[in-house]
Length: 314
Image 1: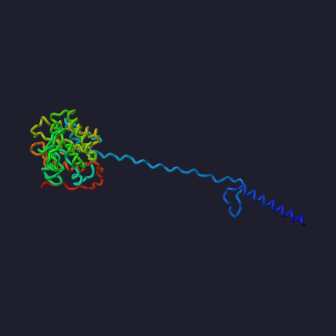
Image 2: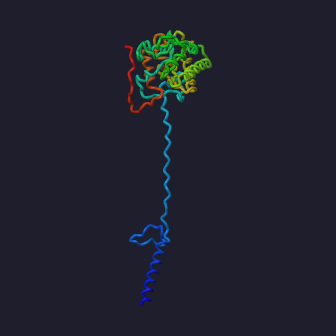
Image 3: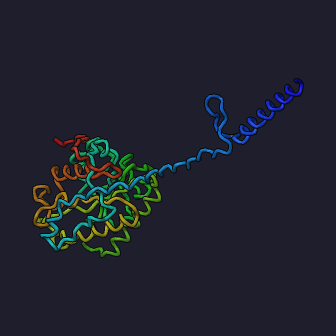
């Protein structure tokens, strides 16, 4: 009997060892349900490869707004004029109307056509505006810009252009010179004087935004017509645009604002002298400046109007 008992015990341990070895063979496998061990030698579950996340798309360059080509037909009909290069990176395109606040940031380094902004009181502070920088007689000549003294409007003292710029560091400086001198200056002379002025101002006023404005058109009633014509002026304007491109400045095509279908300034927008814009003409020029602003967003398609009113001389 004892022998039978020992046999039963031995058989029990043999069965137990066999059962244990089967569980050990399946070690590492997931636990079987109902307390059973996984089948011996079962393959591990396949490990899925990590999915690659798509790379974020690089932001695309904003589309350059379309230039204002409203005067393009006039240039086609008047081939004596040098047309505007509408593909120029310097050309200011239409923008939202930046209003009076934008105009108030601008200082005008100018000759006599834009000096009348002061006399018509179209800028902030009216006649006593400090936004007009020009000679004491109300004009200046590009050919003499290196040594020319303008009237500092902050204290009525005559100083060289560069000294006034260094003192006051304007936010936006709009340069509109060239009508005085274009009759006797060739391309090399004109360009050199203009470039010297621009490069010096960039060095003196590194935080100032420079805008180079076109010379405005004239009419055949101008007493020196022949010495200066709109053919002469548009040629010089192309030189100004080239300077703007070279020095990274903006170019403002206000010539086209006052241009009539015959290739001359619209007479109703000029004074009787055929040279200086009248109040209506200068009001249009200011509206163009506001709606072709440097550093502004392109014009919105919904036609939102963010304009401010231009001070009237009424």
